[in-house]
Image 1: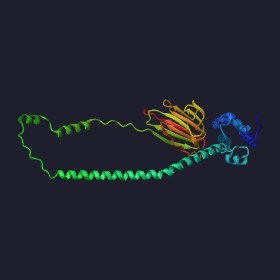
Image 2: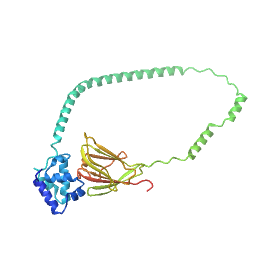
Image 3: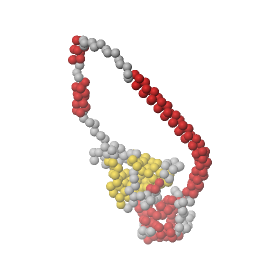
Image 4: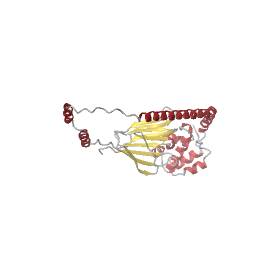
Length: 303
């Protein structure tokens, strides 16, 4: 069993003072009840990572009316820092870059020699081209002085004249072809899909998808992010953690038979959303709102 920390005790007392249960808080924040209970008990080992500890505590504070920044400052000894887990990865990146630099220095030493040979070959090719052009010009001017012998003009044959009269002129055929092309109806162009933001309030943004034959939604994690995907009726299609290097780093859902998709993104900084391959731009910058709600209405052609 875990003993209540000062922070957990403070949050629990404030929640009870407002007459809220953990189920009420779960419905308001969309955070699972076991995570909310872990915050009150100081049991952060159940969280996906230190980053989510801070994100969940911030949503908890906002739901019960506390200032999250003041809570972080007052109880910073009880809250883990989100930057500790990134240190080993940064060190490994520095090491790999160092190794890359040693191999790259050899390429830099050889590069001037390669450039010199390229210039020499280019000049040689240019000289060869100029010489060939001058030789061709001299041969053509020498032939220009001679005159071809006059040919004997033969009167046209009567049969040939009759055949030429039967053939239609080239201009007439070209005119008929142009008229035929003008009479052919042009094929209608298929309008491109439109993905437009129509409303933004608080941490919720609403978009509309038009001129699209399908509605395929893909959510991609660039780090770690908690995602909930539902339709407009509240039916859940996915809820869980998407993380690079874990079993699932992206999720694709076909909403072509639905009228609305509703997403809850826990870490918008490390999350990309695509609609039929088109990247959705967050109406609220992720740096201002880490957790966001996204609604996408599917406006079909016959609606």
